[in-house]
Image 1 (cartoon, one colour):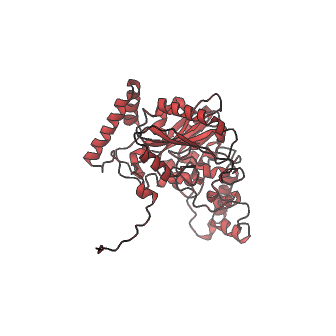
Image 2 (cartoon, rainbow, N blue to C red):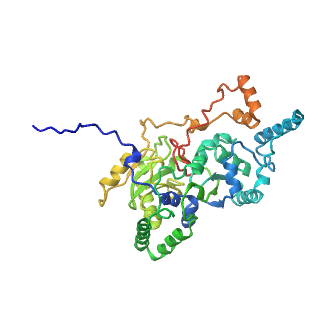
Length: 427
């Protein structure tokens, strides 16, 4: 019996990134709020999009938190900065050069600061902020209400600068992505193929849809060359309203067909299973009418909210990349890829997963979300007072970890959704 001269070896298990279809930078940009919101504004909660200036982007990326001096709500963190400045002035006689004074937002970007104040008033005074893709849910513990509700620009800035999810938007938006056909580095074949894809999308839609889709691809804020440095960033301010978490769902789409639907909140609700058929019908009809013919990419993930279990009305909350960075919640991405590859060209019933009564995920009401991103408030406040204050705080024994929180790292991994440190947030 003949034997192979080569030694048989076991292949190393492939990671999810190895088996996942390539994710283009253009797909990430298509999922940015400022790109899709103009088309779907009538089916989304009230929101405003504000282009961000280079000065504001530098402010977000800098260490430390300097808040506006023209508002009263958040005085604790601002006051600590003032005390630190006073101490510096008293010590100027020691011969050392005093540190340069840091401008607060009212001085550094006054026009943008005023624009944010005006927009918040237009939206009723209370808003929930997010960046291009992510909401700072991991930093909600910094607010008095433990929510994303902001009533002043200072609260908006505090959440954005304290969030790992927002940092992901700023530094790693194109992580694990391939060159996209809109890039100056893309070859001619890629650009031709992309143009063909857009043509197909346009011709399959109605005449009205064709106009809308064309506007999306020509007017969207996308630079000619897509790099982390050339991303146009926007601040999104949504009118604040209390969401019933039991009625939030995530929908996975492949080849313009719904693959699966999952409950977003990881708690069991007794009333949901009986409404499953109604939810599937309402979400499918919503997708078929509004998203299937118009969204530029055939594969994507979107989040919806049904304000009332009955009568059913569907709101579009967010659109996320069809990529491992987006949390699959009650599914796994391996399951979703199998559904995608196994059912091509076949009609099948949409699977909707809800948290069951006996599921390990159920009854999470007392659990701490985003704990890896949390620090006790007193630790944060001391950190704003400078290095000496931090050392004194540590020596006093107050920094031993009492008061909850976790490390300041981790947690982000992606942004906004906040579940398992993933990318997108419907906030």
